[in-house]
Length: 113
Length: 111
Image (tube, rainbow over all chains, first blue to last red; front, side, top):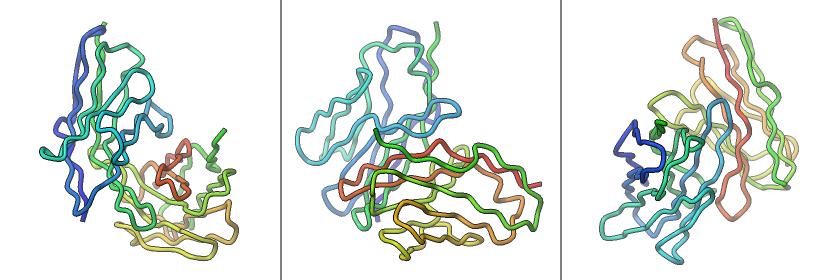
């Protein structure tokens, strides 16, 4: 069965510095991988999606993620954090059957001014 | 624009009450999902449906049931609410592309 591990429950960065949110996955076949973001008191919004095309995936708001099969990783990065990036981020893998998704536990990103 | 709506943003219920959470999507999606979200646990799948009148158990179906009588509507039912069902409930829908679109969530407090 598929699983997702987000390696940090909380990440704190200063505004203008790079962001790195780490994610490792386990899958028995070539997975689809996602990053979703949830701002306080809001629903989840899709940031980006990997589906076996280019290994470097660009998303909204300047975020990108790189699929590394050898490391079973799908880390999320952004060159320069903005205050509005403060939110909870979820790494997600698709199980395929019925389009079921398996969510990581989430990483809360704090951006300091 | 894609839209998933949930009937309530906040609900307060008493232990033993029957609770209905409604979700409606306007995208003609085949698949619909109910999750609960708890701090440190991410989202956990309760039930999902891939067609009208069809349902499948997710990872934590105990204490819940669902109903899908129309393609656009998916209801989550707590037959007898308990305090451990206090949580945020999120509905989502998807087509064959796997990308799920989420509603704003219902925060349920069971006293």
